[in-house]
Length: 177
Image (tube, rainbow, N blue to C red; front, side, top):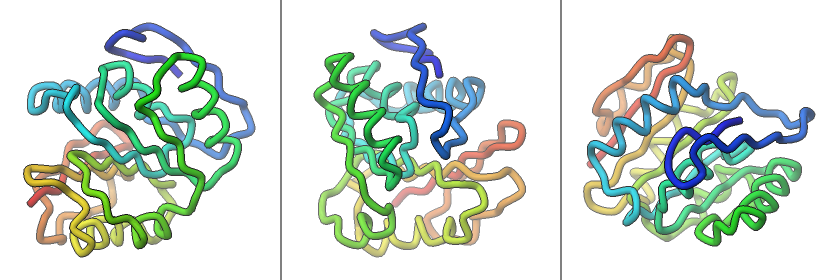
């Protein structure tokens, strides 16, 4: 896992091999952050990273000085790895939370500028993510929800769907108010 931008650019992290993750590819991550940097000042954003896994995306946001990042994953190994890495790299803006994402979303009352979700591709509940985020009103004005999913999956039926960007096997679907 490599950080592609910001103060940690080029740094490599080596998560334990036994973690149940499928990290976002460097190509897709670079494309995503190019889009985001052209639309937002990342230093002012309050971010929620769902299914954070190794923290690949959270660490990328922290490297670019995002204000606050809440990273949610239910796997203890993933949670431990991200928490330890954030401490070692002096990234106090990362708050790792070990819990089920759907439980977290249904209890959360804070609002975020950007919510990124990278669920397991075989998770049948992926279409519920935008539904819950918008029903619970978890985005700040002009906020965005980005869901990473298999390119063959179509999330465009949700009324807050804005666009889909495809990067090989993976796609990002963008949702907003």
